[in-house]
Length: 278
Image 1: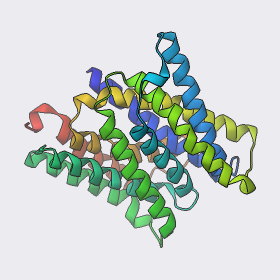
Image 2: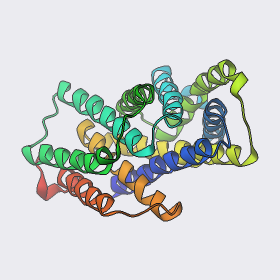
Image 3: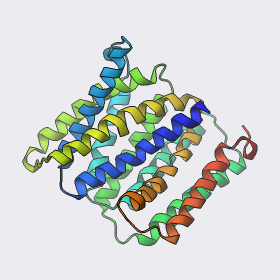
Image 4: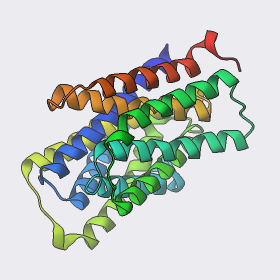
């Protein structure tokens, strides 16, 4: 039950990040580099405060490997959402996560049962139903950015399975990853555009949807096999689309509902004990 609650909270945060990023960049409230920097700083500050409350030192936790993966994920993730729509971006992002984490799990000796592979195919099929029918000539640079982000997020998740203290590790990673945000902002100074609303959205993304949600994710990861951790994240694109329909007033289509049922069924097949073995 603890793992389920942590995972569910983390996935909600992941979906919120997509909504907040789209809201800021889509409306022109903030440029990509400033959004990235504010997001990282907000996450680092929030987590540092939480760690200090526990009388720990941020410098003693996290790693440069995780921080680099986090930084390289956040930068292209933000850039991609300026070039491709949300549904295509989600498909590419979590498709890359699937390949990275399931591949790593297989290399490490994890062997999903047949029913688990069926669940994976159903979930991916749901994403295809959700995204492909609406795709027309997606921007190749945006696709490349999101694929890089997906691989890096997969690496970040895999490394996180070894973290003994999820909160402190996430705090340390965010503190180190701000270097990427500073560099990105420095090379993009000429395109800077800042509004109060944009800064507020980026702060919410970094503080709650990233910092706190990533801590929950790191706490849940030790109890999840690498391939199963990859599969459950397939809920995020559907959750994002449903949230956009409810919050932004986008149409709740029959295609979206079918995709939702396929993804949820596929994920359930991989996590309900009576439906899988091993």
